[in-house]
Image (tube, rainbow, N blue to C red; front, top):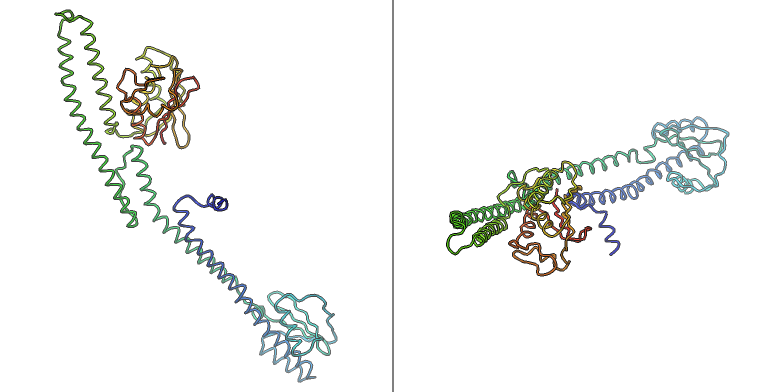
Length: 446
Protein backbone atom coordinates (compact mmCIF):
# COMPACT_ATOMS: atom_id res chain seq x y z
CA UNK A 1 0.00 0.00 0.00
CA UNK A 2 2.78 2.40 0.91
CA UNK A 3 4.69 1.67 -2.32
CA UNK A 4 1.57 2.17 -4.43
CA UNK A 5 0.80 5.42 -2.66
CA UNK A 6 4.34 6.74 -3.06
CA UNK A 7 4.35 5.80 -6.76
CA UNK A 8 1.00 7.51 -7.30
CA UNK A 9 2.43 10.78 -6.00
CA UNK A 10 4.92 10.89 -8.88
CA UNK A 11 2.38 10.12 -11.61
CA UNK A 12 0.89 13.08 -13.50
CA UNK A 13 -2.62 14.03 -12.45
CA UNK A 14 -3.81 15.32 -15.81
CA UNK A 15 -5.29 13.26 -18.64
CA UNK A 16 -2.65 14.47 -21.10
CA UNK A 17 0.26 13.37 -18.91
CA UNK A 18 -1.26 9.98 -18.13
CA UNK A 19 -2.13 9.32 -21.76
CA UNK A 20 1.39 10.30 -22.78
CA UNK A 21 2.84 7.81 -20.30
CA UNK A 22 0.59 5.09 -21.73
CA UNK A 23 2.13 5.74 -25.17
CA UNK A 24 5.71 6.56 -24.18
CA UNK A 25 6.20 3.70 -21.69
CA UNK A 26 5.74 0.91 -24.30
CA UNK A 27 8.02 2.76 -26.74
CA UNK A 28 10.78 3.10 -24.14
CA UNK A 29 10.36 -0.54 -23.09
CA UNK A 30 10.46 -1.73 -26.70
CA UNK A 31 13.57 0.33 -27.44
CA UNK A 32 15.27 -1.03 -24.33
CA UNK A 33 14.52 -4.60 -25.41
CA UNK A 34 15.76 -3.90 -28.95
CA UNK A 35 18.93 -2.27 -27.61
CA UNK A 36 19.58 -5.25 -25.33
CA UNK A 37 19.04 -7.75 -28.13
CA UNK A 38 21.24 -5.76 -30.51
CA UNK A 39 24.15 -5.01 -28.20
CA UNK A 40 24.13 -8.07 -25.96
CA UNK A 41 23.14 -10.65 -28.54
CA UNK A 42 23.46 -9.70 -32.18
CA UNK A 43 26.33 -7.20 -31.86
CA UNK A 44 28.33 -9.47 -29.56
CA UNK A 45 27.76 -12.53 -31.75
CA UNK A 46 28.69 -10.66 -34.92
CA UNK A 47 31.83 -9.25 -33.31
CA UNK A 48 32.90 -12.70 -32.18
CA UNK A 49 32.43 -14.09 -35.68
CA UNK A 50 34.42 -11.25 -37.25
CA UNK A 51 37.17 -11.65 -34.68
CA UNK A 52 37.41 -15.37 -35.34
CA UNK A 53 37.64 -14.76 -39.09
CA UNK A 54 40.49 -12.28 -38.57
CA UNK A 55 42.19 -14.70 -36.16
CA UNK A 56 41.97 -17.42 -38.80
CA UNK A 57 43.61 -15.08 -41.33
CA UNK A 58 46.41 -14.29 -38.88
CA UNK A 59 46.94 -18.00 -38.23
CA UNK A 60 47.25 -18.62 -41.96
CA UNK A 61 49.77 -15.75 -42.34
CA UNK A 62 51.87 -17.08 -39.46
CA UNK A 63 51.84 -20.55 -41.02
CA UNK A 64 53.00 -19.11 -44.36
CA UNK A 65 55.84 -17.22 -42.64
CA UNK A 66 56.96 -20.33 -40.81
CA UNK A 67 56.79 -22.74 -43.76
CA UNK A 68 58.32 -20.68 -46.58
CA UNK A 69 61.62 -18.89 -47.08
CA UNK A 70 63.21 -16.32 -49.36
CA UNK A 71 61.50 -14.91 -52.41
CA UNK A 72 58.57 -17.29 -52.18
CA UNK A 73 57.86 -16.10 -48.63
CA UNK A 74 57.92 -12.44 -49.73
CA UNK A 75 55.69 -13.16 -52.75
CA UNK A 76 53.14 -15.00 -50.63
CA UNK A 77 53.19 -12.12 -48.13
CA UNK A 78 52.41 -9.57 -50.86
CA UNK A 79 49.72 -11.84 -52.33
CA UNK A 80 48.06 -12.15 -48.91
CA UNK A 81 48.27 -8.39 -48.44
CA UNK A 82 46.43 -7.83 -51.72
CA UNK A 83 43.81 -10.52 -51.20
CA UNK A 84 43.03 -9.85 -47.55
CA UNK A 85 43.34 -6.02 -47.75
CA UNK A 86 45.71 -6.05 -44.75
CA UNK A 87 48.93 -4.07 -44.41
CA UNK A 88 51.56 -6.61 -43.51
CA UNK A 89 55.08 -5.86 -42.25
CA UNK A 90 57.81 -8.22 -41.17
CA UNK A 91 60.12 -7.16 -38.34
CA UNK A 92 63.15 -9.51 -38.49
CA UNK A 93 65.08 -10.39 -35.37
CA UNK A 94 62.47 -9.10 -32.89
CA UNK A 95 60.60 -11.00 -30.21
CA UNK A 96 57.50 -10.21 -28.20
CA UNK A 97 57.85 -10.42 -24.43
CA UNK A 98 55.65 -13.07 -22.76
CA UNK A 99 52.18 -11.92 -21.73
CA UNK A 100 51.03 -12.94 -18.27
CA UNK A 101 47.84 -10.86 -17.96
CA UNK A 102 44.23 -11.78 -18.58
CA UNK A 103 42.71 -11.50 -22.05
CA UNK A 104 39.57 -9.34 -22.05
CA UNK A 105 38.84 -8.01 -25.55
CA UNK A 106 36.95 -10.09 -28.09
CA UNK A 107 39.79 -10.03 -30.66
CA UNK A 108 42.37 -11.09 -28.04
CA UNK A 109 40.27 -14.04 -26.91
CA UNK A 110 39.61 -15.11 -30.53
CA UNK A 111 43.32 -14.86 -31.49
CA UNK A 112 44.40 -16.86 -28.46
CA UNK A 113 41.86 -19.57 -29.24
CA UNK A 114 42.57 -19.83 -32.99
CA UNK A 115 46.38 -19.63 -32.69
CA UNK A 116 46.34 -22.27 -29.97
CA UNK A 117 44.26 -24.59 -32.15
CA UNK A 118 46.15 -24.17 -35.45
CA UNK A 119 49.72 -23.17 -34.59
CA UNK A 120 50.54 -23.96 -30.97
CA UNK A 121 50.27 -22.78 -27.42
CA UNK A 122 53.73 -21.10 -27.28
CA UNK A 123 52.95 -18.32 -29.73
CA UNK A 124 52.88 -14.80 -28.23
CA UNK A 125 50.86 -11.97 -29.77
CA UNK A 126 49.83 -8.40 -29.02
CA UNK A 127 46.93 -6.26 -30.22
CA UNK A 128 46.71 -2.46 -30.21
CA UNK A 129 44.57 0.31 -31.66
CA UNK A 130 46.34 2.56 -34.15
CA UNK A 131 43.95 5.20 -35.45
CA UNK A 132 41.00 3.41 -37.01
CA UNK A 133 42.93 0.14 -37.41
CA UNK A 134 43.90 -2.79 -35.23
CA UNK A 135 47.57 -3.76 -35.15
CA UNK A 136 48.21 -7.43 -34.46
CA UNK A 137 51.79 -8.55 -33.78
CA UNK A 138 52.60 -12.27 -33.70
CA UNK A 139 55.86 -14.08 -33.08
CA UNK A 140 57.24 -16.11 -36.01
CA UNK A 141 60.41 -18.23 -36.08
CA UNK A 142 62.74 -15.38 -37.14
CA UNK A 143 60.99 -12.18 -36.09
CA UNK A 144 57.63 -10.50 -35.55
CA UNK A 145 54.83 -10.28 -38.10
CA UNK A 146 52.86 -6.98 -37.88
CA UNK A 147 49.40 -6.88 -39.47
CA UNK A 148 47.21 -3.74 -39.67
CA UNK A 149 43.57 -4.84 -39.86
CA UNK A 150 40.83 -2.30 -40.73
CA UNK A 151 38.46 -1.70 -37.83
CA UNK A 152 35.37 -2.78 -39.76
CA UNK A 153 36.96 -6.24 -40.27
CA UNK A 154 37.03 -6.80 -36.51
CA UNK A 155 33.97 -5.06 -35.14
CA UNK A 156 30.61 -3.81 -36.40
CA UNK A 157 31.53 -0.60 -38.16
CA UNK A 158 28.76 1.83 -37.21
CA UNK A 159 26.65 0.80 -34.18
CA UNK A 160 26.11 4.50 -33.48
CA UNK A 161 24.02 4.73 -36.67
CA UNK A 162 21.69 2.11 -35.25
CA UNK A 163 21.44 4.08 -32.00
CA UNK A 164 20.78 7.28 -33.93
CA UNK A 165 17.99 5.66 -35.94
CA UNK A 166 16.50 4.11 -32.82
CA UNK A 167 16.51 7.36 -30.81
CA UNK A 168 15.43 9.42 -33.81
CA UNK A 169 12.47 7.17 -34.57
CA UNK A 170 11.45 7.21 -30.89
CA UNK A 171 11.55 11.00 -30.77
CA UNK A 172 9.54 11.20 -33.99
CA UNK A 173 6.91 8.80 -32.66
CA UNK A 174 6.69 10.68 -29.35
CA UNK A 175 6.36 14.02 -31.16
CA UNK A 176 3.50 12.66 -33.26
CA UNK A 177 1.93 11.17 -30.12
CA UNK A 178 2.19 14.49 -28.25
CA UNK A 179 0.60 16.42 -31.11
CA UNK A 180 -2.16 13.84 -31.49
CA UNK A 181 -2.83 13.64 -27.74
CA UNK A 182 -2.89 17.40 -27.39
CA UNK A 183 -5.57 17.62 -30.08
CA UNK A 184 -7.57 14.88 -28.35
CA UNK A 185 -7.26 16.31 -24.83
CA UNK A 186 -7.97 19.93 -25.79
CA UNK A 187 -11.74 19.36 -26.35
CA UNK A 188 -11.97 17.67 -22.93
CA UNK A 189 -10.14 20.56 -21.28
CA UNK A 190 -12.45 23.02 -23.01
CA UNK A 191 -15.51 21.07 -21.85
CA UNK A 192 -14.16 21.09 -18.27
CA UNK A 193 -13.57 24.86 -18.44
CA UNK A 194 -17.07 25.43 -19.83
CA UNK A 195 -18.64 23.31 -17.07
CA UNK A 196 -16.58 25.11 -14.43
CA UNK A 197 -17.56 28.54 -15.78
CA UNK A 198 -21.22 27.55 -15.95
CA UNK A 199 -21.02 26.24 -12.39
CA UNK A 200 -19.66 29.62 -11.31
CA UNK A 201 -22.58 31.41 -12.98
CA UNK A 202 -20.57 32.72 -15.92
CA UNK A 203 -21.84 32.67 -19.49
CA UNK A 204 -20.24 30.29 -22.02
CA UNK A 205 -21.94 31.31 -25.28
CA UNK A 206 -19.11 30.28 -27.64
CA UNK A 207 -18.83 26.64 -26.53
CA UNK A 208 -19.30 24.12 -29.36
CA UNK A 209 -18.73 20.35 -29.44
CA UNK A 210 -15.68 19.09 -31.30
CA UNK A 211 -13.13 16.32 -31.01
CA UNK A 212 -13.68 12.56 -30.75
CA UNK A 213 -17.17 11.11 -30.94
CA UNK A 214 -17.37 10.38 -27.19
CA UNK A 215 -16.19 13.90 -26.34
CA UNK A 216 -18.75 15.38 -28.75
CA UNK A 217 -21.51 13.37 -27.07
CA UNK A 218 -20.42 14.58 -23.62
CA UNK A 219 -20.24 18.17 -24.87
CA UNK A 220 -23.66 17.92 -26.49
CA UNK A 221 -25.08 16.49 -23.25
CA UNK A 222 -23.58 19.45 -21.38
CA UNK A 223 -25.13 21.92 -23.84
CA UNK A 224 -28.52 20.21 -23.51
CA UNK A 225 -28.26 20.30 -19.72
CA UNK A 226 -27.26 23.96 -19.76
CA UNK A 227 -30.18 24.86 -22.02
CA UNK A 228 -32.61 23.00 -19.77
CA UNK A 229 -31.30 24.73 -16.66
CA UNK A 230 -31.36 28.14 -18.31
CA UNK A 231 -34.87 27.49 -19.63
CA UNK A 232 -36.01 26.39 -16.18
CA UNK A 233 -34.51 29.47 -14.54
CA UNK A 234 -36.00 31.72 -17.20
CA UNK A 235 -39.47 30.20 -16.86
CA UNK A 236 -39.29 30.39 -13.06
CA UNK A 237 -38.16 34.01 -13.20
CA UNK A 238 -40.98 34.95 -15.59
CA UNK A 239 -43.52 33.14 -13.41
CA UNK A 240 -42.24 34.84 -10.28
CA UNK A 241 -42.34 38.22 -12.01
CA UNK A 242 -46.02 37.63 -12.66
CA UNK A 243 -46.60 36.44 -9.09
CA UNK A 244 -44.76 39.48 -7.78
CA UNK A 245 -46.96 41.76 -9.86
CA UNK A 246 -50.16 39.97 -8.78
CA UNK A 247 -49.26 40.05 -5.08
CA UNK A 248 -47.91 43.56 -4.97
CA UNK A 249 -50.95 45.07 -6.68
CA UNK A 250 -53.34 44.44 -3.72
CA UNK A 251 -50.62 45.51 -1.32
CA UNK A 252 -50.28 48.77 -3.22
CA UNK A 253 -54.05 49.31 -3.04
CA UNK A 254 -53.97 48.70 0.70
CA UNK A 255 -51.14 51.19 1.09
CA UNK A 256 -53.11 53.71 -0.99
CA UNK A 257 -56.23 53.19 1.11
CA UNK A 258 -54.27 53.63 4.34
CA UNK A 259 -52.61 56.75 3.00
CA UNK A 260 -55.98 58.31 2.15
CA UNK A 261 -57.56 57.50 5.51
CA UNK A 262 -57.60 60.27 8.14
CA UNK A 263 -55.40 59.50 11.11
CA UNK A 264 -58.22 59.59 13.71
CA UNK A 265 -61.34 58.63 11.74
CA UNK A 266 -63.86 56.27 13.38
CA UNK A 267 -62.73 53.81 15.96
CA UNK A 268 -59.30 53.39 14.41
CA UNK A 269 -56.59 54.89 16.49
CA UNK A 270 -53.51 56.40 14.90
CA UNK A 271 -51.47 53.55 16.35
CA UNK A 272 -53.59 50.98 14.51
CA UNK A 273 -52.97 52.64 11.15
CA UNK A 274 -49.26 52.87 11.87
CA UNK A 275 -49.23 49.19 12.80
CA UNK A 276 -51.05 48.26 9.59
CA UNK A 277 -48.57 50.23 7.53
CA UNK A 278 -45.70 48.45 9.27
CA UNK A 279 -47.35 45.10 8.59
CA UNK A 280 -47.73 45.94 4.90
CA UNK A 281 -44.09 47.08 4.70
CA UNK A 282 -42.99 43.85 6.37
CA UNK A 283 -45.13 41.84 3.94
CA UNK A 284 -43.46 43.61 1.02
CA UNK A 285 -40.03 42.91 2.47
CA UNK A 286 -40.89 39.26 3.05
CA UNK A 287 -42.30 38.99 -0.48
CA UNK A 288 -39.06 40.40 -1.88
CA UNK A 289 -37.11 37.84 0.15
CA UNK A 290 -39.25 34.96 -1.10
CA UNK A 291 -38.89 36.05 -4.71
CA UNK A 292 -35.15 36.58 -4.37
CA UNK A 293 -34.72 33.10 -2.85
CA UNK A 294 -36.79 31.41 -5.55
CA UNK A 295 -35.14 33.43 -8.33
CA UNK A 296 -31.63 32.87 -6.98
CA UNK A 297 -30.46 35.98 -8.83
CA UNK A 298 -30.51 33.79 -11.94
CA UNK A 299 -31.29 36.55 -14.40
CA UNK A 300 -28.05 38.44 -13.81
CA UNK A 301 -24.90 37.85 -15.85
CA UNK A 302 -21.47 37.72 -14.25
CA UNK A 303 -19.13 40.61 -15.00
CA UNK A 304 -15.68 41.70 -13.74
CA UNK A 305 -16.23 43.52 -10.44
CA UNK A 306 -13.91 45.29 -8.01
CA UNK A 307 -14.75 43.45 -4.80
CA UNK A 308 -12.80 45.92 -2.68
CA UNK A 309 -15.04 48.75 -3.83
CA UNK A 310 -18.18 46.60 -3.47
CA UNK A 311 -17.37 45.61 0.14
CA UNK A 312 -16.75 49.25 1.08
CA UNK A 313 -20.02 50.33 -0.56
CA UNK A 314 -22.13 47.67 1.21
CA UNK A 315 -20.48 48.39 4.57
CA UNK A 316 -21.09 52.13 4.19
CA UNK A 317 -24.74 51.54 3.21
CA UNK A 318 -25.23 49.28 6.26
CA UNK A 319 -23.74 51.94 8.54
CA UNK A 320 -26.14 54.55 7.17
CA UNK A 321 -29.14 52.23 7.46
CA UNK A 322 -28.36 51.25 11.05
CA UNK A 323 -26.94 54.67 11.96
CA UNK A 324 -23.83 53.07 13.39
CA UNK A 325 -20.13 53.33 12.60
CA UNK A 326 -18.77 50.22 14.31
CA UNK A 327 -17.92 48.37 11.05
CA UNK A 328 -14.18 47.83 10.62
CA UNK A 329 -13.39 47.16 6.95
CA UNK A 330 -10.07 45.55 5.91
CA UNK A 331 -9.69 45.10 2.16
CA UNK A 332 -6.76 45.21 -0.29
CA UNK A 333 -6.87 47.48 -3.32
CA UNK A 334 -8.50 46.41 -6.58
CA UNK A 335 -9.49 42.76 -6.19
CA UNK A 336 -11.24 42.13 -9.52
CA UNK A 337 -13.28 38.93 -9.95
CA UNK A 338 -16.06 38.02 -12.37
CA UNK A 339 -19.25 37.82 -10.24
CA UNK A 340 -22.92 38.74 -10.32
CA UNK A 341 -22.61 42.13 -8.72
CA UNK A 342 -26.21 42.58 -7.52
CA UNK A 343 -26.38 39.04 -6.14
CA UNK A 344 -23.10 39.35 -4.25
CA UNK A 345 -24.18 42.76 -2.91
CA UNK A 346 -27.27 41.08 -1.50
CA UNK A 347 -25.13 38.35 0.13
CA UNK A 348 -22.89 40.91 1.84
CA UNK A 349 -25.84 43.07 2.85
CA UNK A 350 -27.59 40.11 4.47
CA UNK A 351 -24.50 39.03 6.39
CA UNK A 352 -23.59 42.55 7.56
CA UNK A 353 -27.20 43.31 8.55
CA UNK A 354 -27.33 40.11 10.60
CA UNK A 355 -24.04 40.99 12.27
CA UNK A 356 -25.26 44.52 13.11
CA UNK A 357 -28.49 43.19 14.57
CA UNK A 358 -26.72 40.94 17.05
CA UNK A 359 -23.33 42.54 17.69
CA UNK A 360 -22.07 45.89 18.87
CA UNK A 361 -18.90 45.63 16.77
CA UNK A 362 -18.61 44.25 13.25
CA UNK A 363 -15.50 43.55 11.14
CA UNK A 364 -15.40 42.83 7.40
CA UNK A 365 -12.22 41.43 5.84
CA UNK A 366 -11.45 40.64 2.18
CA UNK A 367 -8.54 38.41 1.16
CA UNK A 368 -7.45 36.63 -1.99
CA UNK A 369 -5.03 33.87 -2.96
CA UNK A 370 -4.34 32.10 -6.24
CA UNK A 371 -7.60 30.16 -6.32
CA UNK A 372 -10.06 31.73 -3.85
CA UNK A 373 -11.49 35.03 -2.67
CA UNK A 374 -12.68 35.11 0.95
CA UNK A 375 -14.96 37.71 2.50
CA UNK A 376 -15.30 37.27 6.28
CA UNK A 377 -17.97 39.08 8.33
CA UNK A 378 -17.43 38.87 12.12
CA UNK A 379 -19.23 40.28 15.14
CA UNK A 380 -19.06 40.17 18.93
CA UNK A 381 -22.64 38.93 19.42
CA UNK A 382 -23.87 35.71 21.01
CA UNK A 383 -22.95 33.59 17.99
CA UNK A 384 -24.48 30.23 17.02
CA UNK A 385 -23.58 26.91 18.68
CA UNK A 386 -21.75 24.61 16.28
CA UNK A 387 -24.47 21.90 16.16
CA UNK A 388 -27.03 24.52 14.99
CA UNK A 389 -24.95 26.32 12.36
CA UNK A 390 -26.14 24.20 9.46
CA UNK A 391 -29.77 24.67 10.56
CA UNK A 392 -29.37 28.43 10.13
CA UNK A 393 -29.21 27.91 6.34
CA UNK A 394 -32.53 26.07 6.12
CA UNK A 395 -35.23 28.15 4.37
CA UNK A 396 -37.97 29.51 6.67
CA UNK A 397 -36.18 28.05 9.68
CA UNK A 398 -35.79 30.09 12.86
CA UNK A 399 -33.36 29.16 15.59
CA UNK A 400 -35.03 28.80 18.95
CA UNK A 401 -32.01 29.22 21.14
CA UNK A 402 -28.73 31.09 21.10
CA UNK A 403 -28.87 33.56 18.29
CA UNK A 404 -31.62 33.84 15.70
CA UNK A 405 -30.14 35.37 12.56
CA UNK A 406 -33.54 35.76 10.97
CA UNK A 407 -35.36 37.32 13.91
CA UNK A 408 -37.88 39.79 12.68
CA UNK A 409 -37.45 38.60 9.08
CA UNK A 410 -38.60 35.92 6.70
CA UNK A 411 -36.12 33.25 7.71
CA UNK A 412 -34.45 33.38 4.30
CA UNK A 413 -31.46 35.68 4.82
CA UNK A 414 -28.76 33.03 5.05
CA UNK A 415 -30.58 30.68 2.66
CA UNK A 416 -30.57 33.41 -0.01
CA UNK A 417 -26.92 34.20 0.70
CA UNK A 418 -25.81 30.57 0.40
CA UNK A 419 -27.92 30.06 -2.75
CA UNK A 420 -26.24 33.03 -4.44
CA UNK A 421 -22.76 31.97 -3.27
CA UNK A 422 -23.26 28.45 -4.63
CA UNK A 423 -24.52 29.89 -7.91
CA UNK A 424 -21.03 31.46 -8.16
CA UNK A 425 -19.43 28.06 -7.52
CA UNK A 426 -18.60 29.12 -3.95
CA UNK A 427 -19.83 28.50 -0.44
CA UNK A 428 -20.66 30.21 2.88
CA UNK A 429 -19.21 28.80 6.09
CA UNK A 430 -20.15 29.70 9.66
CA UNK A 431 -17.61 29.56 12.49
CA UNK A 432 -16.47 31.09 15.74
CA UNK A 433 -15.21 34.66 15.49
CA UNK A 434 -12.10 35.86 17.28
CA UNK A 435 -14.30 38.75 18.48
CA UNK A 436 -16.44 36.26 20.40
CA UNK A 437 -19.47 36.08 18.11
CA UNK A 438 -20.24 34.60 14.72
CA UNK A 439 -17.91 34.50 11.71
CA UNK A 440 -19.55 34.12 8.29
CA UNK A 441 -17.05 33.45 5.49
CA UNK A 442 -17.96 33.73 1.80
CA UNK A 443 -15.61 31.75 -0.43
CA UNK A 444 -15.68 32.39 -4.16
CA UNK A 445 -13.47 30.77 -6.84
CA UNK A 446 -11.30 33.09 -8.87
